Image: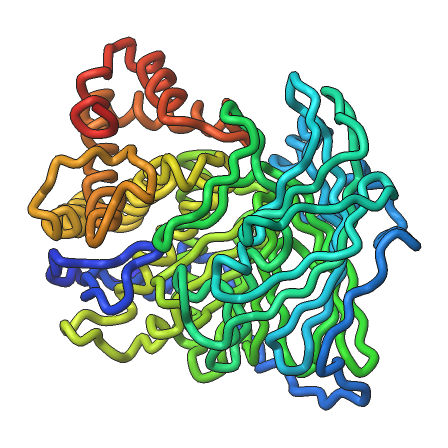
Length: 536
């Protein structure tokens, strides 16, 4: 198919194009999407909507968690990585040998027929990779933070009952029967029940059942990170991301009503239907497990070793198709310029989130309102343009957030500003430097919201108030990254980013790591530049 010329739309400077945009913010115009897939040999097929199957046995109105301790959730050694191989590309599978001590989640849960109550059990195998003995293990209870509710029971450590501490509603402290020495392994088993909010509330509605779509983020007890501060148990801010997490492996079995389509992180390795549906996902290496459910249709395309699936309600299939095209082009671009994408699957799903987009490992979420691609925003900007910039940004997070992690509460610029810069490079690589420069003006527009306040981009989320977080991290942040590119030169800068990903692959990078490696590559002192832009 012949590639159509690119139409460059006027830029609305006061824009809100990237993930976690504040509700109600005006949206920017971007270049229109290409009329063809990035790979002209690839085919895009539109699958019919999944049929609604009336269950002969309904999911229980109130889901009941399974008992702990009696039997293992899966007949599988937690150290066995075999279930994850089908979900990894050749390059992704190479990392398995270096992740022997990564946490392993085995999870089994049921979604009730009202789609607002989760009951489950999880077994976490945790290896002490620190150089000190650990007396306890901490888990985040993010559902309580997200205006839902989670309760935990039947907690055991290596089969022995323990009395967990939940005095802080956002945390679960599991005391160990005896200190866990460096290199030691403990298995923690528990049941949990999570009630899901039925409106779009705090943190953009990442955990909600609304408009007949279930968004199931951070619904389970989630391991905290042990770092140079000890157990990092900081509470998330009302804006930005909630999670700071180590790379882990997730084997998750979900039972749900049969008349919904389940879209989960990772790959499906088993599914059965007997009144309800039971689907088992294998996700890993990954920093989280996410699931969405609803009446979705799907369009798909294959890029290299990866199949991209784009899900949306049937009436929004054109939006799903456009998101698919952008994701295919972005995945090919980032894989070539940064590092190979590690998974054999990338899923895109739309939910009613109040953010424009949200990233999860191997899965990105787009706001439902963007999928009406024939409509314009109140400011006259086509939603198709917003869909392109948002999708490209969220795909970039597969490299900056997932492949290379960071403390998203204390140093959000490392994934958000670098991810936003990467979106600019997507436009450059796909449409040319002039279009990329036109898109880059949206960052200036964001910064203008705070009158170009020279506030550092490297502060914790909680240090920003009002418009500051979006204006500084998403606006001034990528402007700094381009200043760094200009200082180092594009070729040297690109080599540096590739090396940053290679060195911190499946680990966590810091601002100090980022700067030190950049200085190594340019052979220059960047202290003045970082002091002026990132941290004084």
